[in-house]
Image (cartoon, rainbow, N blue to C red; front, side, top):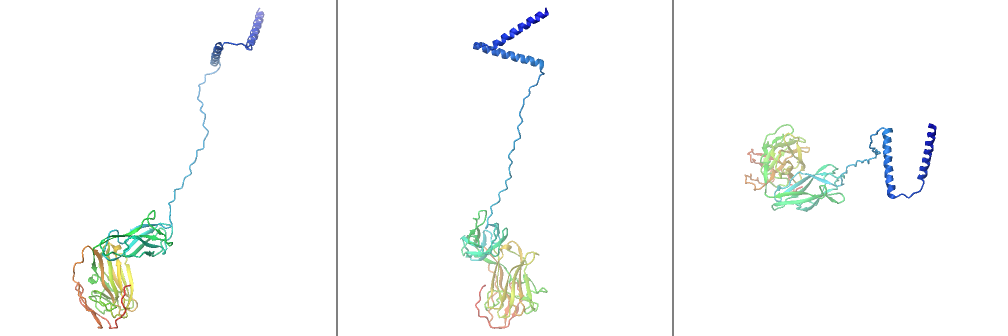
Length: 424
């Protein structure tokens, strides 16, 4: 019986399978709605079966979000840029300072003065002595159109440039402009653009007065030869040397130009005499002025005059020296002291024999410190000038304003030179 049932179910199953297979390939024209509904039903049954099978056969898996990893990307690298180099010029200058006559300095009417600028070479080319300081505009002060540089100036170096000027004869504020010129004749100025000029700016007013009279204050100085201190006033004719005030000394040409000091070195070869004055305070615009030369009829004089100064215990420094022989001429000294403004300065007068000291009578006529004042000089006692000696063998020295004793200086009478005196 069981075998018969088995065969029955087997035949039935095969028949059903064939029928279903034929039905799948039998063309039909189903209704659209029925077709769509059957698709939805089939899809739902499929999902249901898959869900049921998954529940039976597969363990649950927690869904994870898979994020793709980005592949490494090369970032651009930044190359360091070197700093910009400053633009340099061959010829470039910078103003450093006014060495003399700062802006607004007072200058007496018609007075000569020396303007000095300190400047720096900030270019790449050396300034040679073919370079020059040149006037371009404004008040010229009687100066030259161009003044050559005194020395060569390398890049980064400084130099002091000076020019001789004369103040106008009318009161007022005056300004003049200068610049530089290279060896090719091309002008260049100052500052970053090279278009700025340096200038002189002075206030012309007032009067020139004597701030200190070295002749009248002869014995404010300590006088020495090479060995010892000398008395003041000295003894005329002393072999140790001497310094005397003369009220009206005759110069080489026989003329009298004011009171002065006669100095004679120690009477040995290359003898010397030096006078160091007490310290005085210098003001801007001050000048040292004097006439120097040989005493009249001192035919064999051959000397070197020196003007020096000292501040405190600092080393002695030179303001100038001049070689003088008996030739009928003399020197006019005018040294601008503005660079010493505000300092207490000791001035030193020196006469040095150039070989034999025979007849080395050195004259300092009207040696003084001049300065500018808003008021004219007050009237002071001025010793009367002695009459000009003729062919007599001596001159008389009178007392100074500080009542120093009288002394005489003896000179051998010789023929008076006839050459016209000139001012170097």
